[in-house]
Image (tube, rainbow over all chains, first blue to last red; front, side, top):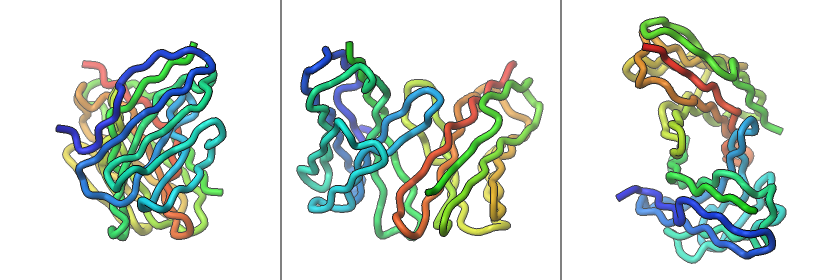
Length: 114
Length: 110
């Protein structure tokens, strides 16, 4: 099984619908992140959480919300999806006790908003 | 604000033709520079972390180097299976977040 699991892997939804993307990890890491990836723009940070009680906005948080249900679970919600939220979404984790923590990524969720 | 610029955007090489990818960065206090490999439709896979200028790390046909302003990923005698997008990212001591470049899409032609 993958260390970082994202569900669903693919999703098509209509404009205005609420959608949740889920992420779970078995690495025991305290830190979790949500990124989106668009062609030509690279990976951009949406939200991050350094522990269960700590949630922080990234560079592009507008239109998104998150919930850290447990150390191993971090979900991303689009309250009212719009077409420009069509992208590839990645969850990642890292170990905050490492001096130079590298991020471990899930396989991604391809979201299409029509 | 941290910035990462990667060049070239795309690179096509013949099998066995060595080359280098560039990652230029601006960061207030470099904590680490990271290289990742990403295959189509998959999440980035960690390759290297570099911590200080002058450092070098190697893995199979890849060698990463670091100066105070840029990092290079050298690919020696590449094979078709090295085809992927290579991403560079930096983290700083102030916020510990990763800032990514847009990547170099590498294609190795048999």
